[in-house]
Image 1 (tube, helix red, strand yellow):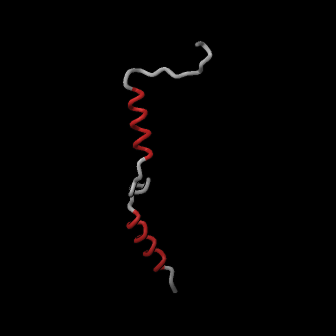
Image 2: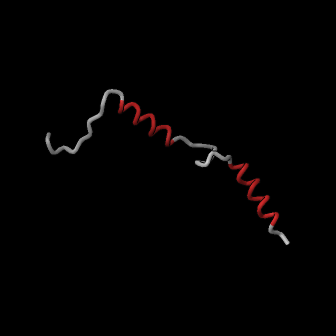
Image 3: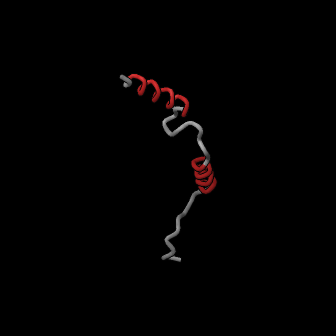
Length: 53
């Protein structure tokens, strides 16, 4: 169909797209920054303790 607006993929591209989508949807215990939540909490505590009078 000339007006279908579809996409053409090379061999193996659909498998790669599905794999990337699955990987992106997986929960990541370490945030996007690569720093664990425990490290972020520790740094926050250090910063807030310095501000106490």
